[in-house]
Amino acid sequence: MFHTIYFSAVVFLFGLVVGSFNNVAIFRIPESKSLWTPRSFCPQCGKTIVWHDNLPLLSYAILHGQCRNCHESISARYPLVELITGLLYLAVFAKCGFTWKAELLPYLFMVTVLVIVSVIDIQMQIIPNKIIYPAIPIGLAAMGIVALVRGDGNIILRSLIGFAIGAVPLGLLALLIPKGMGMGDAKLAAFTGIFLGYYQAIALFFGFLLGSILGILLMVLGGKGRKSRIPFGPYLAAGALIALFWGPAIWDFYRNLF
Ligand SMILES: [Zn+2]
Image (cartoon, rainbow, N blue to C red; front, side):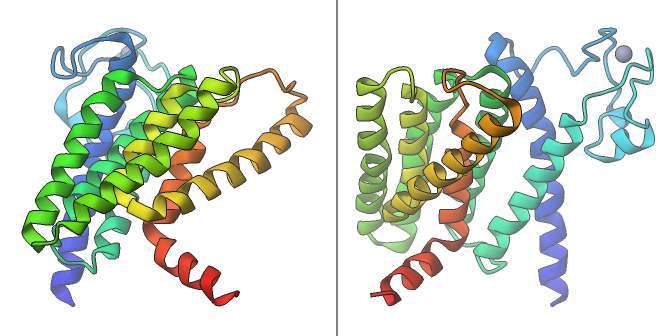
């Protein structure tokens, strides 16, 4: 019991630190800037942020969401991304039964990429190839290691099937209706399929469901025309998380209906 709480706290704190890195990635990758240099700086006054003003969540609270130097307010996106990443890390650890299962690292990698890609897609309506292209072989390699550890080649087979379940339908949609779906969405769905296997079908189902419900809501509330492009990446990401955490339960429920 004590170990479970202790390790959960470690995983959550690790998630907060990665969340802090996610903020850097979200800010710098679309602008093709280095992730490692220069150190983090205030986007308003450009002053380098000292390490004790750069602690995930804590610094935002202590500084009341303001830069120490110029007192411009810091976007609430920063602590939000940190908190979401921390909570997702905790959820993945719980999904792995609070143990150091081989699947832990690949799943943590998947949720990290999903956070970065979703925020960039919301802000800029783009899913950068610079993220997805390296993420796909890393994901395949990570699942390959899981297959080796488990001595189960079917794991790789399921990853490839999941990849196809994500890539093929959305890739065809992107080719047929280029104005609706982007090729980036197909790549993202292919990426999550590596980790989800067959459950990528559930991810797609919920991605489309959430996308259409919220798309209609946005249209009604915001009076947005059908032409304004709605970023689909966050919905695919939400669908992938639903499939990751509840895929087997949803599949059992569905089978018991018939
Ligand atoms: Zn400043």
